[in-house]
Structures are given as C-alpha cells and as structure tokens.
Image (cartoon, rainbow, N blue to C red; front, side, top):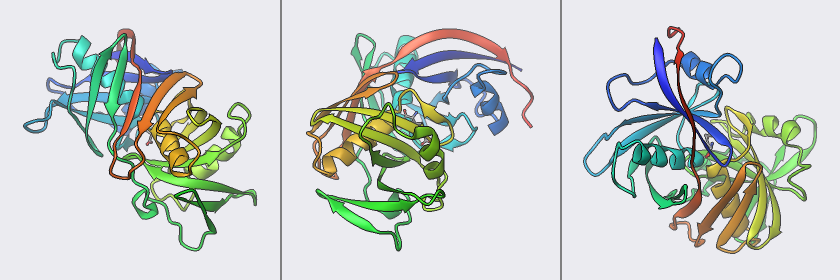
Amino acid sequence: MQIRFTKMQGAGNDFVVLDETQGQRGLSPAQYRFLADRHFGVGADQILSVRPAPAEGIDFEYAIHNADGGEVEQCGNGARCFARYVHDRGLTTKKVIRVKTLSGVIAPEIVGEGQVRVDMGRPELRPEQVPFDAAGLQSRAVGRAQTWQLPLSDGAAQWIMPVSMGNPHAVLLVDEADTAPVAAVGPQIERHARFPQRVNVGFLQRVSRSEVRLRVYERGTGETLACGTGACAAVVAGIHQGLLDTQVRVHTRGGLLQIAWAGGEGDSVFMTGPATFVFDGQIELPEAP
Ligand SMILES: N[C@H](CCC[C@H](N)C(=O)O)C(=O)O
C-alpha cells in the first residue's frame, strides 16, 4: 500500500506526519516501526497521525507512536509540528488549535517565525500517578520536591525525581550534560521495574537559574536530539527543587526550547519552540502483520 507522509522536526526531534483526516486510520505496530526505521523506512523518532475532531469544541485528534511502534500519551515537539502542519497545510485557519491526545486536550498556538507555543497542561508530581513505585526506596527532600534513590543493575544508584507531563519522566541532575552517562544509565532507568509503564530519562545540567542543558533518553526511542515533554518535566523538577526560576531556556542537542511554569501544581507548563517542514514523500508500506 502506498502511503504519503510529511517529514518534520522540532529542535531535531524528528517525525513522520500522516494525514488521517480522510478515511484510513491507524497502522500496525510493525508498520509504525517500519516508518520510523532509519535504514529500511523513512526514519523518525515518532510517527504523528492527524485525525478528525472527536467532539465539539475540539479541532483535531492526534495519535503518537514511538519508534518501537508503541502508542504514547503525549509529545511536546510533536505538538508543535502537528500545529504547524494543520495550519500551513490548510486543514485549519485557526492559530490556536485545540487537539485531543491520549493524555487530554492541549492547545498549541502558532506564534510566527516557525515558532509554536503550547500550553502543555499541568505536571503530575504524585509518584503513583507518574506512575512510579516508590515503596521502600530511600528518599530525600530537595526544596519542595521529594526525590528517590533508584538502585541500578550495576550496583550503583541514581537520585531521581519522577514527573508526568501526561507521559512519564525521571529527571536526574548531572554536572555536565555533554558527558552524562546517557547510553549507560538511560536504558537501565527506561525499563526499570519501579516504572511499570517504562519512563523517559532526563539528564539535567543547571547552568544558571534561567538556563539549563538537557539530554533525554526517550522511552521507546532512545536518545533524541530534543524532547519537549522532557524539557517541561526537567524544568518542573528544577523549579520544584528550588534550583530554577519560572522562565527557563533549555538547550538541547537539537536546539533551544523555552519553558515557563509558575510553580503551582495546578499551573500549566508552557513550551515555545521551533517546528520545521523537512520534505514530503510517499513509500510502499508492508502489509500489516
Ligand atoms: N518518548 C515519549 C514520547 C515522545 C516525547 C517527546 N518526543 C517529546 O517531544 O515530548 C514517551 O514514550 O513518552
């Protein structure tokens, strides 16, 4: 089956965007894996599927699948690329677009010069809601935050702060993002038994109270050049631990994201960043196993 797609990227986190507003909806996990494959398919960190409005007052729905084919609740860089796609390809004339994801409705806003601002909703800090099983682990308070010591398979342990942005994140503080043990520690925490739905792992270096550097080992994909929900989770963790102010510039390997959070658990996290078209294409999709 021939399938048309649009390749996009937000701060280097790259996507295959599928327009499913007419007819065809949903592929198999193997077909999502094929599209994400950088050798046999198109190549992407996630696949974004744009679907018709599911209800009054909502403009679209969008589904998110990781490179491993699994469907997930939220994608921050993807939300910006989704908004740019539906606006620039004429699927809507709105500049503030209400879109339903698995974790709820968010409202990306086209703000010009290729930048999109997204109200990512409020963070979830209760461990059991992330979800994170904290039972019996050593914990310590840092600022207003609770952090836990996570035992790793190599006998070491990492202090982490669990945060959900609709999808689960574990945030670690590191001295230097560039030399952080992302490849060694990321996979161990991503599939740690204490995270029953696995987890995205953020390695956060504090440069100042308004500037950080961040690398993320993403659930279901591995290290990406940027992670939007990861940037939100990292800034929330930093603010809650008393290390950051309410407006933070997040330097990722793929570009700059600007995150703002007033600091109340009922307050939304706002993310502003780029959304860029790369190319349009079509590809022969293997039959769904
Ligand atoms: N890997 C993430 C989904 C994509 C998130 C990321 N690409 C972003 O920009 O937020 C997860 O499994 O929850």
